[in-house]
Image (cartoon, rainbow, N blue to C red; front, top):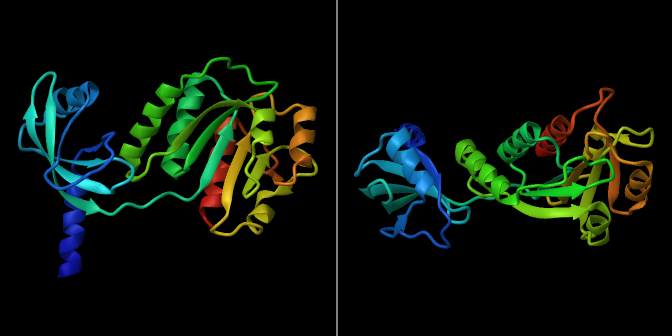
Length: 251
């Protein structure tokens, strides 16, 4: 009976709207003000009212049940009731990719967040065609994907780096797996055999035009890298990222 009650309770909570708030600490009976976009969403899209319950999380203190105690066009205050999920964190898997066109990059950010990467890093390579990247917009996309996918933490987004800078500052306790269509790359199934659950993993996916020969040489010669092959077909950047992360997530 206790198990059945818990399942019914959890299902009831899942029907409640889920909102991320940028707060350092969550405690019972604390009150928090929501942003203008959140107010518009709750008030005009969902048609919620004072007294309605929502779920909130901040990426560090689990998930909480909260009550709307005031709501107007420009203000919304919520009061925390109780914690309904304890905090847990995604595995230490980082995706590194060269910026791609908007719609494809939006899709990539959404899906890798849903899959549970802990870090997202953008890297400039020789054949990268995108010159400007809006990091603030990517942060909002990560938050939205986290809200919808029920994850409790927020993936870290790093500023755009050049490939040389990335490799020079590399932490030697991280394993870097490079998706490359070259003869010396090993099948990803073989690469998975070299990884344990405690390993820190980074996956690098190249731009639409692939890596240059010089970049391939630099990557292959680094002691912390493993060149991996995702199969016979040539995959787009976003497809390669999703395939690689999905494989490493099964560990």
